[in-house]
Amino acid sequence: MRRRKTLYLANAYGFSAQQESGPLVDLVATLERIGAEVWEPFARNNQIDKNVGGWEYGVGQDDMRDVRGADGIFAVVNGCPPDEGVMVELGMAIAWRKPTFLFRDDVRIWTDSSGQAGYPLNLMLFTGLPQDGWQRYWYTSLEELADPSKALVPWLNGTPVRGT
Image (tube, rainbow, N blue to C red):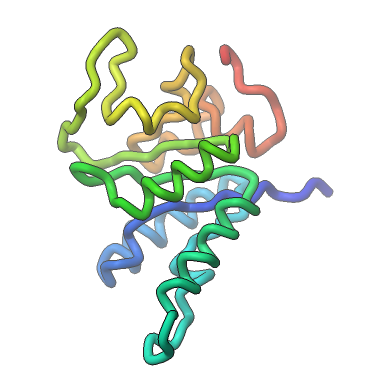
């Protein structure tokens, strides 16, 4: 039996009880259903005693270790601009050459990039994606996650992504 690939889920949903019990649960369930072992940082690393000094540093170190140890990263890039912590986690993953997948179901338009590529967010967020075919790594709905013509399902199954 092949080991399930681990996917670090960079997100800010865990800061809100309503988002944690709604969108976060749905996103994790969908990613698991298509074959990922999801490493969700709020579930993995935030069972801490906030009365103990230095807890913040420990959470950051645990999250960094998980980004480094995961097979890939799935980053929720909602917001204008997206969450700072998610951006740091995404930057680490890109620097460590982790397979990168971006998710934005936020309908607001935000970009400081222009040009032929047509990136919907700051161009630096796309540096971990292939130049041609980056759209296969970009998701805007939960339903899209199971689309085998996009990059995530083939990657989880260990098959090459077509057209990249």
